[in-house]
Structure formats: C-alpha cells, structure tokens
Length: 81
Image (cartoon, rainbow, N blue to C red):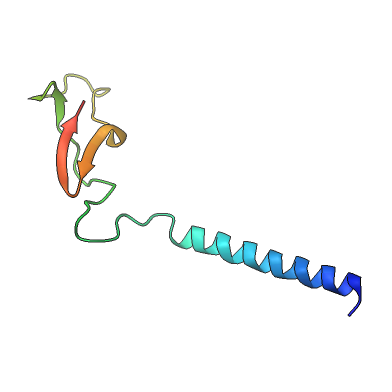
C-alpha cells in the first residue's frame, strides 16, 4: 500500500470512530440513573421550598426549588440551601 492509501484508511477509521462515539452519546444522553442506590436526576414532583431547614409554601410562581441545588447522596435528600 502506498502512503495515500494508508492516510485515507486512517481517515476513514477515525471518522467511523467519531460517528460511533456521537451515536453512543445520543443514545445515552437522557439516562436518569444507573442503579438502585441513587435517585433519579429528574423528579416527577416539585421540590419542597426550604429556608435554613424550615419548609414553606411558595407565594408567587417565580419561587420554586431548582433541581441543580437539591443535594442528594445515595438516595438521601438533604433539601435545598
């Protein structure tokens, strides 16, 4: 094989690997959790609003707990700061 054929074969292989990686990323993009020890990342119900550990009801529609600030460790929820 000459040099151009080797370069082309390497380019085709790297393109195939990149396509396979992107296909796997798309397939596993929305996976919630992997085992029974961890809770799902997306909650079906809304989180309880808390201020220094004391729960309260929302006054307006703008007040709602964000999922990114909800602390979790092995299925135990610690509330929202």
